[in-house]
Each structure stands twice: as C-alpha cells, then as structure tokens.
Length: 111
Image (cartoon, rainbow, N blue to C red; front, side, top):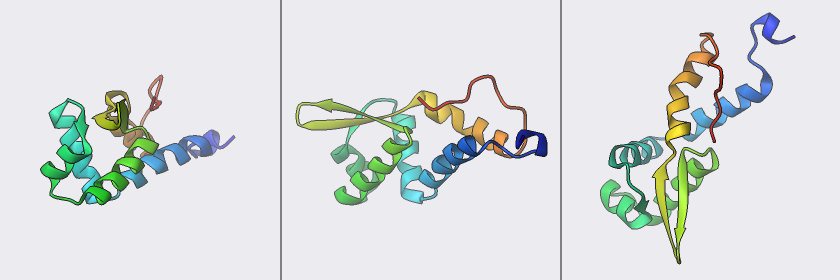
C-alpha cells in the first residue's frame, strides 16, 4: 500500500537511515575510506596511526560502522582486525538512488 503512494517500505527506510546515520560523521567517512582503499584488514592501532585520531575514538567509530555492517571484524587471538565489507559498501550508492526514487535493484541487502 505504501509503495502505491510512492513511499519506501518502512523496514527499508529504517535500514537506509541507519546507513546514512553511520556515515554522518567525518571520522567514520575517513575510516571507511581508509579501509576501502587499503583493502586489507587493519588493527585499531594501524587505523589510529593512519588517521591521527585517538584509540578510544577510533574504537567507538568502528563499533558504529560494524553495527551497520560497513566494517567486518576478524578476531585474531586477543586482537581484532577490521576490514571493509565490500558487499555492504557497494550497496550504499544504490541505496541513495532508491531513496531518491530510482528503480529498485533485484537484491539490495547489506550482509
């Protein structure tokens, strides 16, 4: 019924809103960009060194990015390595198109 009125289904709107909210911070954009460009898992320490942002701040931002699955966490002993989630990040431009009323692709999920 909502689609007939031109409304995006509520569940989809909430998912996309969480993505946009996660990227509504310059430091998180920088972390996503860093991980996407490096294309290798990185430790918090490596991200701190590359970004110049404090460890607790980087950890906080990584937690938010992991919650929306833009970043994946790999445990290695007592350490965690972070990497970009290619599937999820590749959906983001399409999500922006969908929100703007462009055709919906066959499958748009962030796994």
